[in-house]
Each structure stands twice: as structure tokens, then as C-alpha cells.
Length: 111
Image (cartoon, rainbow, N blue to C red):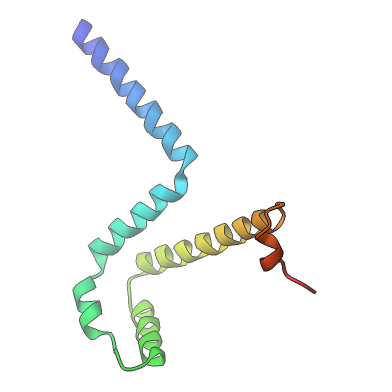
């Protein structure tokens, strides 16, 4: 009985720790989910061998066509990842510009 109770208590502690960590840092877990899903669904070696290396427009066109022809779940994950990066970058830029750091004088937008 004592061993069973100890196991249940420790399972609850681990669950609470994981839940609190996930709620505090959700971006890291979403990025890890994106990377794991990408490696499961995308053949990275095939992408690297098929990418054109002669010019940037051809490489960009290759990525657009590859994204268009990929599965819906990967399109949703990639779109969500880029939206999260843009929103996070905008929030970080806004906070940085509104601080009193000396570097913000260099990046402050002038109208």
C-alpha cells in the first residue's frame, strides 16, 4: 500500500510539474512538436538533393511548389509556425522600442 501511494503521489507531482512548465513555456513545446512532425512527414535528404542551387528565385519557387504539394497538416503547422514567429517578433520589437535602452535610438522608426 505504501509503495502504491508513493507512486501515485510522484505521478501527480510529475504531472503538475509538466503542466506548469508547458503553461510557462508553450513556444518551446510547439517548436518541438513542429520539428518532430516535420522530420516524421518530410524527407529532408530528398529535399536537399532536389533543391536548385543555381539562383535564389529558383530555390524560392521550389519551396513554394513543395509547400503547395505537401499534406494539409504540414501546411497548417508551417503556417502556424510562421504566424507565431511574426506575432512574437512584433511583440518583442514593440517592447524593445518602448524601453529606455540606448540601442532603441538606432532602431526607432521615424515618420
